[in-house]
Image (cartoon, helix red, strand yellow):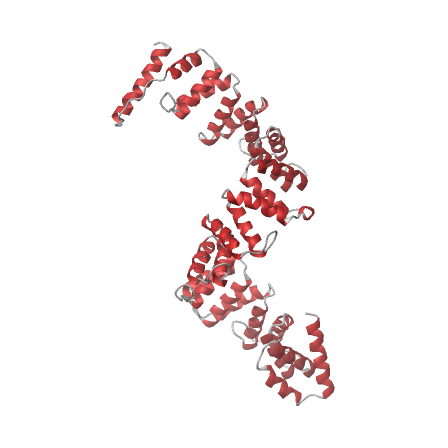
Length: 470
């Protein structure tokens, strides 16, 4: 069968298939396809590449991946650079044969094909089909970048920014990111903005950061939308504008960005840039919490505990506080301790309460330190130990926890867990009262009757010095 007859047979089969599929009009055989096939079979590599493209796109011939790959290979084996890139892409994306992909990318890259150079750099970057080698990745990214390939410019900027395969150099990172960003690469625009906002202190420029965040955000880059929202939220590089912050947080949140979801929820909670809407806040806290955002898990727990924006549900509150506590969030650990101590949303369990109070207390959360002092004082979940109680109340009191200051003052007055010391007792009672602890006034008055004027003056002096050192 001649070349032209073979092509006509192929097109006829395509036409018959279309007829059975119910097409109203049969495709007309493409003279261009026939001519290209004839030239391709005679060994013309440009025709082979063109025919592969025609089969790949279904132009003038039925779409056929196998035929497309066959003709790409014929052209590639003759040294056609674009065909080598397409063949490499096929092995990487479709056949998932990284070693074969590297082989063809390398052939094209060595001919100076920028796309192949970028892909070869990426293969070295991620260790696919070759041993991971950052220096080799930088070498090939640079070759492609110098030919104007935006993706390679962006990746080269990334390598310099992180110090991978080359010494960390923010000036070089800015140079290459800028080249890619000016070609419209959204990720490069975001990365460039990030260097100006969060990178080398010598390059800090919030206005320039906002400029590039904006360009990336307008192209739909969720990370840039989030950070642009944050810049408007905190007035960095722009005039503080809650409505603009809300706008950009919303765009990022709708793309699933957990931090944006969390801060959007806060804005609905606090009524910043929008009317207070606890139901909407709960919705966004929930989305962020489900993605593992610890702060959102904690805040969602409070909403369930108090019935704000959702139906009150202590079991659901317990669930979310547990998730946040397990991520190490001290506020959640303390609240979880409270729930175990009080039997809210879970069976009362003092030992578990102590466990979570200890975790939060060791993170210097004064509320947990105060609670832990109470557990030791009462012997709940631990052996009663006034010295240990005083230890934890002292830690909390030094963080200006009013209730701990009251309890510490009483223990100094009673000489329980610590040597009796009226001056220290009075000092802590003065501080507790100043910090809003109402019971401090009566306790202080009782103690005054047992103290000399000199002791009272010394205690007041110590309280003043404590305040001045805070």
